[in-house]
Length: 297
Image (cartoon, rainbow, N blue to C red; front, side, top):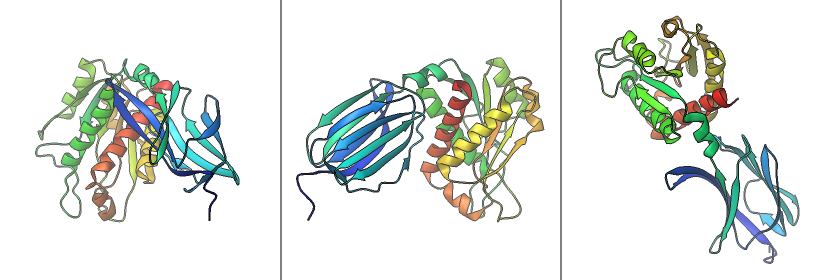
């Protein structure tokens, strides 16, 4: 029988929550008793060494990638010693609170103010591809690219708006819209970035994966495409099929522009993924992370 005098770590999780109109990252450690710990931090991590404790949870790393927190890990170093590591993308102020109960909770709250500083100066045009008579690609069942693109764009706008970016949708409804009108919105608003949302399509139903195109005429577009491809792939767990130059985007001139196709709608499995609303949230967060890396790094 386990020694009941030891604190049992029963759960370990993270989320982003809102308070007074601002977003914060939160890490929660649930346990049977209050924790006895020593704390240390660097620009890359926060470490908590917990004494007289056992972990009744998986010791392996858990991916988060919420724009600040990258990974969580719990390690049972000795019979009565646990190390909790919170890997972070950049140094951020944090507070630690404790609440009694069943379970007891130690809550580490990180300030995400830096993200507001990154995004508040940006003007971003978000383009849901296709629309109206232009349906785009279609899935093996019945999904249409034009509808998927609008949901992806709306979700991306929500994430960017939360942190003060000025965002502009090229279309908000199902309508025909010439490509030049989409680009003109970027010129009119002196956009720092143009993001077009699509899905891939191929006559071969076996083709799958993520594709990102970029404006070869604008400095930094290729790097941005690589960052966004990596972050979206990490969130949705799909392979990067290609990162390519897109000649249509050269009409944007020196405005960095990308086309994100997170999945291939003609693939039966990936069309199925598009029926899960969480996929759209993950794609949006991946784009958010990629943009953050580009303008912060």
